[in-house]
Image 1 (spheres, rainbow, N blue to C red):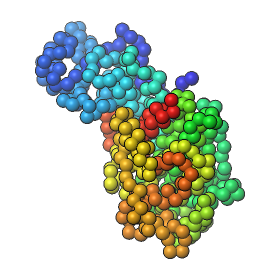
Image 2: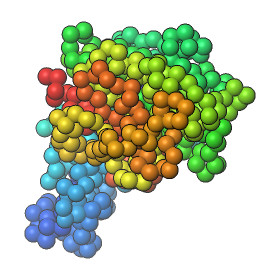
Image 3: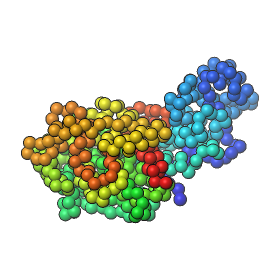
Image 4: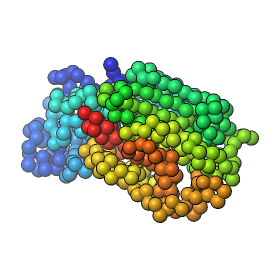
Length: 463
């Protein structure tokens, strides 16, 4: 069975063997020492080609036809392990194979696949693309599985809210569950109050598209319990504490946590890992209406803690609070939540390096190792207890928006920690879910973050 696709697209890979054109991936040293194909070398030297990182030089045949290409890796290829992603966007359309490259086969092919991503759903014209033959010593199934997970996250985030509101996100979630024969359930609208999800209802009740809680179950009872929770705010106006127009431009991506846990769940299910998987996604649109929640309101959470609303734009942690409390009730072995939660995380670490928080030192070590092994960047930030005082509220147990704005990513994580107590291990990921600029392995836009590292960790801890 092929991996799930939210948007069907042709594969970036080919299987044509001898009919493909060669690519010589080289460093400046290869040019200087002459340790590549002599025809390619002669053309490179005549053209003054320096093999700079990401540079491409097409090679003609004696008859003037396209005969191959040289691709520069720069002096230190390890600095950009997925540099071959640039090939997918710069090569002429056609079928290609790597003839020589000082890169591991899996990274070479995965990099090309990641870089091949296009979100052209709304484009009137679609141009043909280059394809690459997966090297024989690469794990083709694993590469395609990871690409499917990444592409799902990117596709969901990139889709505008007029086509990715709560109802459409539920449909995508349902399709993912059906593809892998997972159990799926949903609680919608006022039923959230009956089932004790008051904060999810509170945040989403002002929208014409009802709030909901999505749940997927897959795997076998008795295996390691892995539970994933993702923030699904399909659009965030800020509520009555409305955002300025410039801050709303990217708010379609505020469901990036949901998109990423769905991408991670895809990888887990497609690989048939031996886990008891549960995925929980609270889905809302933070809108403005006569029944919108207000600054100063106080609400009781699923766990019983009361929350004082000091800013309606700090809505993500509210819906996660109910979802995490619900997830925690089953005492999972590993509980992961992912959310596009705070601007403070981006100020601290920028858009490409998502922080994570956990009080489990062993899990933190394992995640750091997985990050290095997959070249999927992560960085641990502290759950510093000295800031616990900042989330206390004057009239309720806790506030959703501490005053002062200092250490915002940490205080948000400490807020969420109040709703987790039974899980054996818990980690919170404050992701951006967006690549503001083109990179070797990404054309920019919606982005999967941390899920390849998490998949690697889960895969290697459940064998």
